[in-house]
Image (cartoon, rainbow, N blue to C red; front, side, top):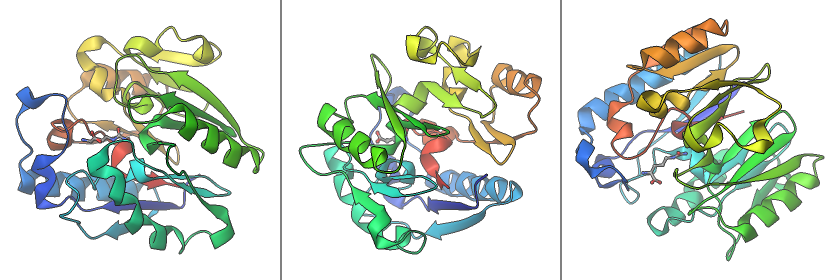
Length: 256
Ligand code: CIR
């Protein structure tokens, strides 16, 4: 169960966020703000307390707070984002983590290691880590070493196409995994109950489980039906403006 969630209000420079899909257009700032507010409401409905950090205009992608830290039940790890324009985002998260974790349980990934939280998927005491354009082998080595100190295990998942691991695979607890594209046939996920997401709704592979409820992006009926078919109560949140800069539901929060 999660007690706490940290989110960060989008800044007006969010329209300058990194994107692999410029054809979708730039985010509408006011709409992004209202979608973000609805996201916070959905999280609150799942019974967590939500810490809302102020916007930071220096970093267009800073609302994607998931990438700057990995939060576990025993420790927090401040990452070292591989995207140069995002690397400085980590400074602001440290004092926030200090409110929840003792200093000796807050760790850091350091250069030349890089790692972004979107590449980390927690399944109990196992952490799957995507080796991506943002997360390198040295970052994963450091991450695994830190986790080992807490009795956690790390499994590397080489990525072929997507930005982050959780762009295409997400764990919904109870052995249930939502998978799309390159993750459908990966050997490391063979033991899970996999729900394959159709290519046309691949964006919605990024759902989040929060205390028994699954939050699904709005507008993906096949995924919504599949998640409901697994027996989960669901909430939907429109993330259209974040999608334009490659962001999804998980990217917008730290949950612990
Ligand atoms: C980026 O490229 O870093 C942002 N535009 C999107 C980050 C999405 N974060 C995530 O998947 N965890």
